[in-house]
View 1 (cartoon, rainbow, N blue to C red):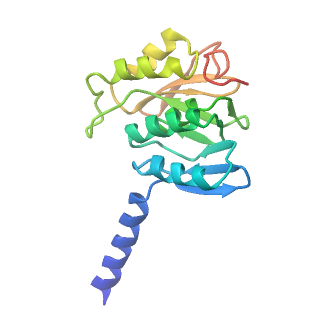
View 2 (view 1 turned 180 degrees about the vertical axis):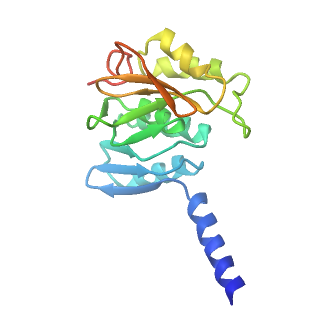
Length: 191
């Protein structure tokens, strides 16, 4: 009986992570939260067929599947949807946010976390910086120097975080302020 209970828990957990971010429709908003697993683009596409979504709210995401981040960002832009971050939206989630026509951070502690694309061992993938550096400027007029810096961070334990009033570079959890920068003047947020 104990083995059966453990098996059922394992199946439930693996099924939950395979399904992708939680996406909840609230009026004309789609609220997306959680880890990015790869199914999000199809999920959002289906929601957009049946709902007049004007804003995608991204919250509590550490990121995940890079290709899903690109796909959702492109889908959001295709449908001319605005994006908002409430809380944190890191890594591949940031590509989703950058797809927004209007991009905002809701609240003083809301942040977008940016870095490159990495392999399973956490090392920067060859070609990833070039792909990001070609993609990002077509969605947001970012500061080129900052973009080159964050897309070339060598390991996935490094991240640049941008808030409404500040920015920081973090390396394995140790963060250093990036004086004078924030999401708006870095070209990430639109307001």
